[in-house]
Each structure stands twice: as structure tokens, then as C-alpha cells.
Picture 1 (cartoon, protein in one colour):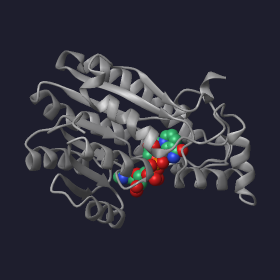
Picture 2 (cartoon, protein in one colour; picture 1 turned 30 degrees about the horizontal axis):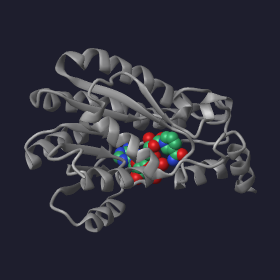
Picture 3 (spheres, helix red, strand yellow; picture 1 turned 90 degrees about the vertical axis):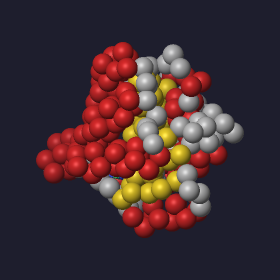
Picture 4 (tube, protein in one colour; picture 1 turned 135 degrees about the horizontal axis):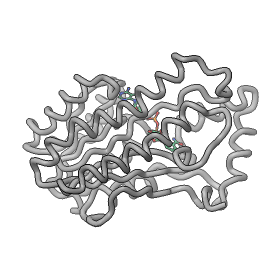
Length: 256
Ligand SMILES: NC(=O)c1ccc[n+]([C@@H]2O[C@H](COP(=O)([O-])OP(=O)(O)OC[C@H]3O[C@@H](n4cnc5c(N)ncnc54)[C@H](O)[C@@H]3O)[C@@H](O)[C@H]2O)c1
């Protein structure tokens, strides 16, 4: 109940399936949370559901530098500092298309949200985290950041890029006692997976799901709360000596 007592956290992609569970868990553990999402309706719904002065929402685009700089400053101003950033916003991009058939616009869009968005979060949170004497940046990558997969090229590329970005940040920021780690979930029971299954098999999305399930030793998708618990570990002081690493939550998928 108190693993994040009085810690100020920014969560991006907060109105999505994983972000919502992380927001609930972080607040239950005592955090003050600034929730960021590009979808103002879903964000308002989450803020009213949480119904606490310890949670506020800001609609913003993580790929826009001014937006990111503004919401980091807003967290500092509203709650008096910044301790944790969960850089979680991400998009699936074109699923079911080979690299040969992706457009430049599709590729660049995925990179701008999934990679530039996380870099901007690191860049603009660093001064505030440093001023607190340290902190934790948790980046949502994926098992798609560790292994290749066909017909999801921009997404796989973006999630691999996050591994290099996070390791670089971990090395550069260690002297400021800012830790940087990735969470790498396997397929999560979520709307994003429904979108991907449909992209892979538009006529029978369940076929695509069964195919994916057959590759997971635990025989099921990860639940959002299981991902959120790993995020909590990395956000909290329980992971005080962990930096520059990948934390996989995948039911054994990449072990095969
Ligand atoms: N769902 C999965 O199976 C899975 C697996 C591994 C990793 N991930 C990663 O987990 C993270 C969260 O995914 P999710 O499953 O909750 O998906 P989701 O689509 O439910 O949530 C993502 C949220 O990010 C927001 N968002 C998208 N672009 C944005 C932008 N430019 N600025 C601000 N907000 C933006 C969306 O509005 C949405 O609310 C993503 O980075 C995703 O790649 C998901």
C-alpha cells in the first residue's frame, strides 16, 4: 500500500489498457500521478473514476516536444517535484503488412510515437528527476523489442530502438541516480492485441490469436495487472540497484 508514498509519477498512454491498471496501482501505493493521453475522453473518464486529488489528467501528444516539456513541468508545478516517469504510450502501427508494403507515413508515425515520444519523455523529465536527487524512468517496450516477428516491422523496429535508447539513458543518467529500465510484455489481453489479431487475419482474428497462443508456454496472454505490477517494481525503491535492463513479462514466450 505504500511502495510509492508521496512519489510524483507521470504516466503516458495512461488511458489505455495497461496505463489504466498502472495508474490505479500507483495511486493505491501512495503516488501522486499526472496522467497523459492523446484521447481526452478516455482520460477524463479515468480521472473521474480514480476520483482523487492525487490524480490529474492532461491531454497531450507524446511525439510533440512542446507538449512533453509542458506536461513534465505541469507535474512538477502541481505536485512539487517529479520522481517517476512511466513512458508507456505506444501504437501498434500497420499489422499484417510486410516491410515491403508499409508506407513511409506508416513507418514514420510509429517511430514518432513509440521512439521519439519516449526519448522526449526522457529528455524533458531529466532536469526534474535530477533536481529530486534521482528517480526512475520505466519504458514500455515489448517482447517485440527482443525478438523479430514478421508483418509488424515498424512496431518491432520501434520496440527494439527503445532497448538502445533506454540503455543509453541508463548509462548517461546513472551519475544522477536516475534509473532507466524497460518492461517487455508478451501479448497482453487487450484492445491492442485485438487490433493486431485482426490485422494478421482480417477474416478470422481468432485463428490469429490461437496461433499466437500456441507459442506461449503458459498458454495464455499476459493480464494488464501483471504488467502493471512489474512497472510498480521498477518505479519503486524495491528496484533501487536495477538500471539499464529489460524486465520480461511473457509467460515464457522468449525462453523458447
Ligand atoms: N497490448 C499488448 O499486447 C502489448 C504488448 C507489449 C507491449 N505493449 C505496449 O504497452 C504500451 C501500452 O499499450 P496498451 O496495450 O495499453 O495499448 P492501448 O492502445 O490500450 O493504450 C495506448 C494508449 O496510448 C495512447 N497514445 C497513443 N499515441 C499517443 C500519443 N501520440 N500521445 C499520447 N498518447 C498516445 C492511446 O490513446 C492509448 O490510450 C504500448 O507502448 C504498447 O506498445 C502492449
